[in-house]
Length: 253
Image: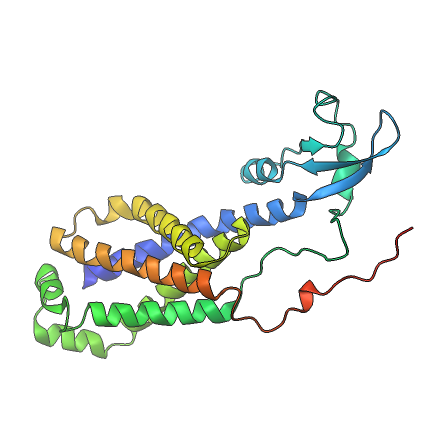
């Protein structure tokens, strides 16, 4: 069980290390996404431009963000312009057509808590006497008394709960960044995160017993599918308010 706890701690550590730059990249992406109305320095008329938000987010992870345009209403004819409108574009708020302000998808906590709880229950059943506890005990070299003592401790349960919560929030964050929802989008996003964590943690778990890797690998895969399906499917179902989607009453001059 000690090796299993080391594996879980390694996954949590890797997840946290990946989350920090990811959160910073998301903040940069949200800062520069969207079309903006600026005055073209060449013809002195208003044009709509878009900043390459993804490029700014990626370059901003290691240095100062590299700001460049990704689109303009005068393109493609004037695509090779000097982009002298960039300072104004950076200082201008994103422009949204219509009277409804389109907000980025939010992260709703209730679906995340439900998904994390379901993942914890799945783990309890998966490692129970009904399924793989005996094989799991053999792979770890534990006897029944040791497992009974382990179950009575709080730390393994708290660690499992924390891992499920962290993974669920990671899936919800990726869905929000990609502006996606739905069961299949949730599953695909969750499996993408699961695959990244497996690749990142593979050097630290390569010495574990093959049987243990199969049991925990299958469990983590099913956990990813379950969490992704719940968060993606419940995103648009469990929300406290839709006030952020109300029309904006603006005056057009």
